[in-house]
Image 1 (cartoon, rainbow, N blue to C red):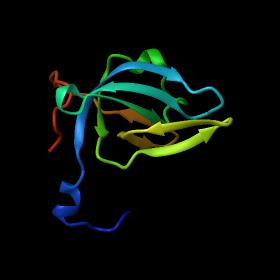
Image 2 (image 1 turned 135 degrees about the vertical axis):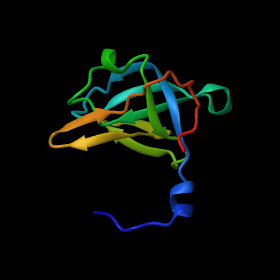
Image 3 (image 1 turned 30 degrees about the vertical axis):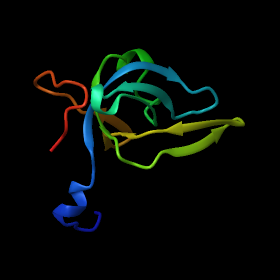
Image 4 (image 1 turned 90 degrees about the vertical axis):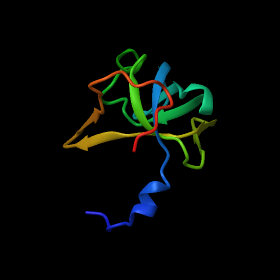
Length: 115
């Protein structure tokens, strides 16, 4: 279990709905999918790398509306000498050797804030 935080710590996170416009396998990576995500007019389109390749294919996440953290500092990394930058983080439930993506009972618009 992680330490208890105050509400102000939680409030710093900018959690948003993003619609996956494109998804592809990252060659040379066992874990990553490259997602092109639409967050609506306020944030626009971002590239986000997610470690969900073991459980999801690009076609299974394309066009889905998912939950992302949009205000993390971009993270740069290299795979096989090629440099990448992730501009956010996908949120998923992390179970026993599985990941589960959050779903909605309604159809939120890209960019909708999670509160």
